[in-house]
Amino acid sequence: MVQVALLLPNNYRLLSVAAILDVFDTVNHHYEEIGRAPLFQINLIRNTTISKEGTTFEKYNALSLSESGPQNLILIPAFGTSDLNTAIQENLEFLPWLQQQYKKGAELASFCTGAFLLAATGLLNGKIATTHVNASPAFASCFPDVYFTPEKVVTADQGIYTSGGSTSSFHLMLMLIHNYCSRDTAIHIAKIFSIDMNREQQSHFGTFHPVRDHGDELVAKTQLCIENAYKESVTIEDILQQIPSSRRNIVRRFKQATGNTLIEYLQKTRIEAAKKLLEQTNLSILEVMLGSGYNDLKTFRQLFKKNSGMTPKDYRDKFKPKAA
Image 1: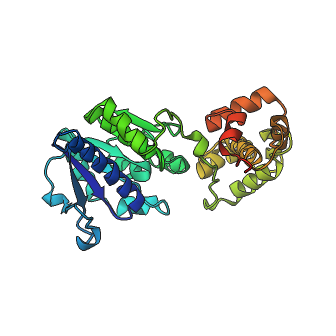
Image 2 (image 1 turned 120 degrees about the horizontal axis):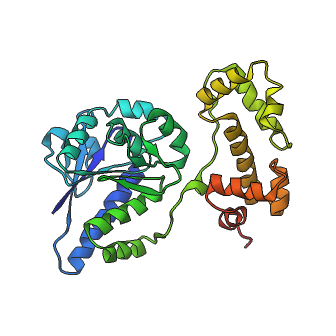
Image 3 (image 1 turned 90 degrees about the vertical axis):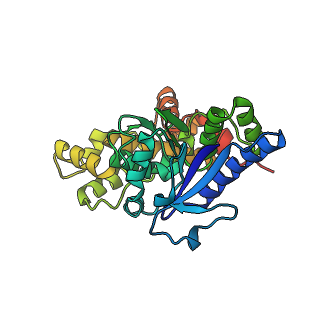
């Protein structure tokens, strides 16, 4: 049997753990239905700071790190996103264990924000990875040595896998089932859970959440200037004229504080405004373009697709509620 270790770290998302267990249990049940022995032996692995009583799931035994043996596949579920740095600190005990298991041949897979714990091992350095699209700025800042691809739904690199947010976890599980079982089994599971197998990007699920708790008043003033002027056909140079600082100084401080360059921040602000107009109004694409600060339709479409992964029309079709 394939030994599958599902970590139970501090602050894990119960929904993430439940989804993983449900899918892998369904694969085992499918094998039994076709007259084969279950493929996956699922082992729940806890650290020593979690009480055994608090992490016992029906049908499963939760083992401590010291009780666990060699694993073939290790799954890292999502964390709560309120304080990811603290979540990593509370689960440092897992890091040497993950490093040792990978060195011995285990494959590792993180789901959603579980990528933060995986990246903290250093095993993702130089490898491609993704995570929840809204946690992307924090991930890129914390782990600059990772080849980060926030638009990806799933990634695979040298036996290490990551997935984007929420439902992207199912796409990673399908990839693992395809690898460990067969394509036919993956298709069977996709049908049971109604998973669209063809999703390749998650950019359109993202929402721009500007960093505001950086403590730099000059940067905060610049952010406010951009947010107040984005509807106008202004340039960054126009905005900088309102800021009592040298261009070089504010450019450096802005990038350091927000994780975005000035032009990136202006573009993200405008595209986020365009998304809301597409979701909430019946304005034409031309009117949406003008209402979000652009005056060239070709440029608007290119930037919108770059930021969201789809055209303005496709975005509206996907997210604007249909009349009953």
